[in-house]
Image 1 (cartoon, one colour):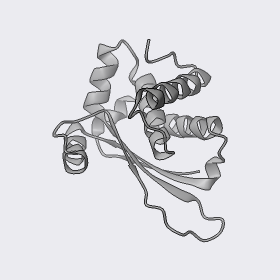
Image 2: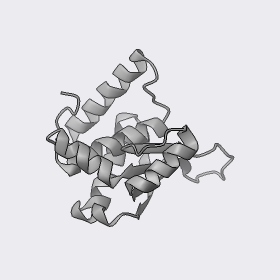
Image 3: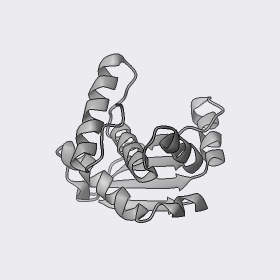
Length: 154
């Protein structure tokens, strides 16, 4: 797996081992989906609320910061053996930190959950209807359990 990590917001420095956590979370998602991590490229951006608010307004018409955004890469022909670019996952530090505190979770566990959530979106999962939401939540819970993280929906 090619994992590009960009830390744009200084507040993310409070989360020691961020790169290792990101790699572990992504590998767990690929394993749960029966996919080889080496077949994919993923970009993770650890950003600010303002940057995420701007992206959310521009791409989703929602003028507020949200915890995580996923932007799938466009499908394109690739040379044989080249990893498939999945897209970008962007997390907003302030929102993620506030949610973690409000929900009694560690920043580490909440960030891992949101990275997993974002990558599942890039792999085609969604929660647009009750069935999709239930399936996606169950998959997230199973992946998180494998990482020693409790059910975030309880």
